[in-house]
Amino acid sequence: MKAIKTAPLKNVDEYVAVQPKKVQGILNKLRAAIKSAAPKAEEVISYQMPAYKYNGMLVFFAAWQSHIGLYPAGRLMAFEKELAGYERSKGTIKFPLDKPIPYNLVTKIVKFRVKENEEKAALKKSLKK
Image 1: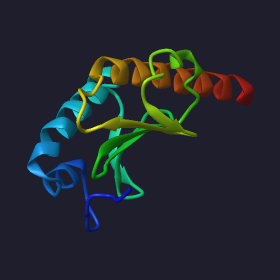
Image 2: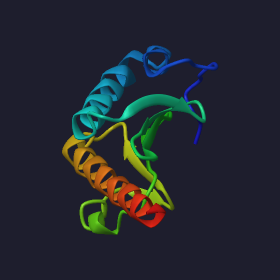
Image 3: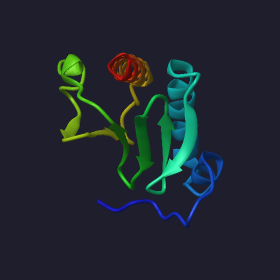
Image 4: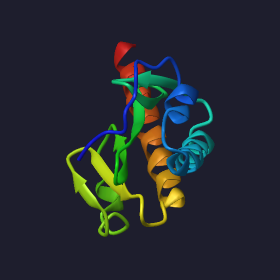
């Protein structure tokens, strides 16, 4: 598994721009799905990957030669059935480039992560009182 080449990047626009043309459209749709699910999230580059922060990290993504990696920063047991057809490892979901990307599922995962982070932030706030 080989990452698609990237130089040190300043923002997600740069990340997308250095990817192959066929991957750029996929990344832009993925980015739009994430932004629609988490409109208040801050878009950053972290570990040389696009990442989204809202009350902590929500999700990262990266382009590879044969897949797009989605790295939700939380547990996804609620999505076991929907993710059954995808290769996964701890904290990683691989969406093959030769199959349609499940953007609706990505949106659900990001909304789930937003809720998790909001609950965590509220708990933290209540413990400080």
